Length: 232
Image (cartoon, rainbow, N blue to C red; front, side, top):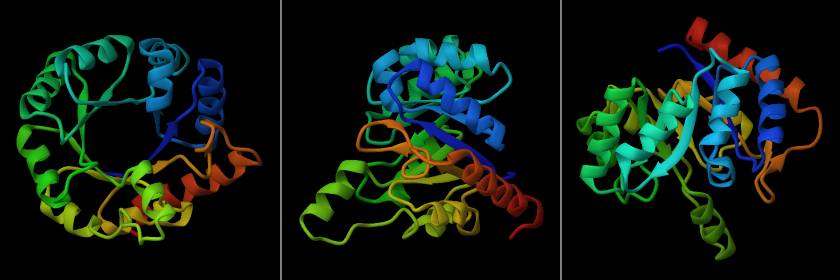
């Protein structure tokens, strides 16, 4: 799979999501993610607004589905999402229902291993259930809690090569990566590069970051895309 740059729109209003998405598309981003804060605040209307503005762009709805899998996937597919996210920690039947809805409505399913004790085994289960992508994820609260306790925090890079080797699906790594680390994830076998905090989003307030984000994002997109063309 070629390298892809995905921006996580972890904001809480449609106007800000659209403004950030326009900036990202100008900079060369490939996929837009309706982040969980936007999904919570605006529901399927946020996805509809992104689809209306960007009719040809892949849109990931970061539902983090734990139950009601078929219905949640259906709602987001009808709103215009091309990808939906289900949690590996959900009941197996929920994952199966999201996968079934994906087939029924023509959307891809991304399985997220957040919270799994054995993340490699979790990735394999997601593949076996029929997911199309694996998200290797170290959670926001987990990272903050460990840091507050003065304990070392795992990085998504720690097991990324092992996970990429364990499955045949495209993999992306999420959670606490610096921009430099995120850009290097294709070297670990994960061609889907996700950009969010701290480059584009202020994670403390779910607002677009300040500064010249567009210029930085353009350079990152160029580097990631060049990696896909040259292999390094």
